[in-house]
Image (cartoon, rainbow, N blue to C red; front, side):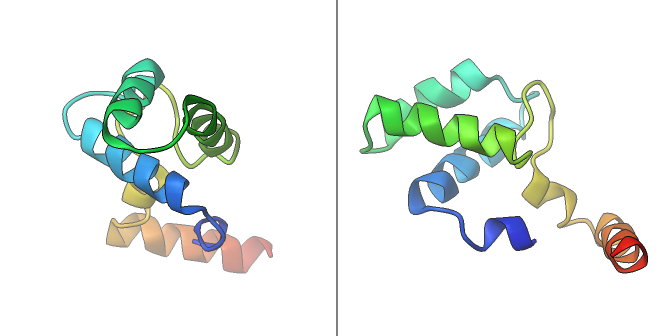
Length: 89
């Protein structure tokens, strides 16, 4: 996943929290923000900006029960992704 190779440490930590939250129910951005604020030692602005950036990069999606890292962890989905990338690009 090329778009994850240049991701910041705070983004990785927020992504990990998002993965945990989506195990139970679809991702609620407010819940993600509150949980990140509780668990992480970053400013509110940095957490908010990072969540917004992850949404813009389509790494996390509000109201979905899966995040991008979980999608490509599935062998069939990964094979489809690689096929599409190799065919189109």
